[in-house]
Length: 200
Image 1: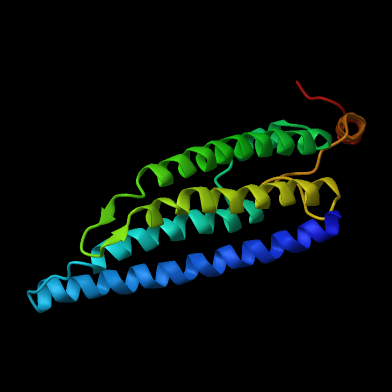
Image 2: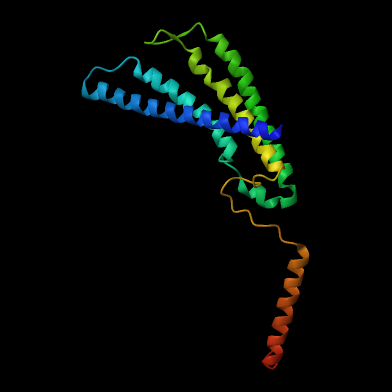
C-alpha cells in the first residue's frame, strides 16, 4: 500500500514539475513578447501580460510540490544541529504537520476564493479569473501529497533526515568525548615529564 502511494506521489510530483516548467517558459516568453510590443513596435499587447502573470502563479504553486518533496524549502539548520539525531524524525514530523496545516488552509480557502471569483473575467481575454485562482488549491493539494510521501520515506529509512544538502554532523557519544579528553590529558602529562617537568 505504501509503495503504491509513493509510486503515485512520484508521478504526481513529476507532473507538477512539468507543469511548472511549462508555465515558466510561457511566462518568460510572453514577458519578452510584451517588452517587444511595448518598446519596439509601440503597440503594447493587451493579453500577454495577463497570461504571463497567470502562468507565473501556476508555476509557483505547482513547483512548490517538487520543492516540498525534495526538501529544498528554506530551513533553519541551527535547529537541526541542536536536536539530537535520534529525535530528528520527531522534528521532521512536527515540521511536516505544520506544513500540512498551512497547505490545508491554502487549499480550503483557495477553493472558496476560486468559486467566489468565477464570475469575474480576465481583462483582454474574456476568460474567468478563477482559472488563475485555481492554482492555489491545486498546487496545495499536490504539495500535501508530496509532504506526506516525504514523511513516509523518512520514517521507513528510504531518505535521510534533515534538509537537503545540509551539513549535519553525526551525533557524538559523550563517553567518546570524555575518553578523548583523558587521552589528551595523559599525552600532555607525558610530554611534560619528558621535557623535565614545568619550568618556572
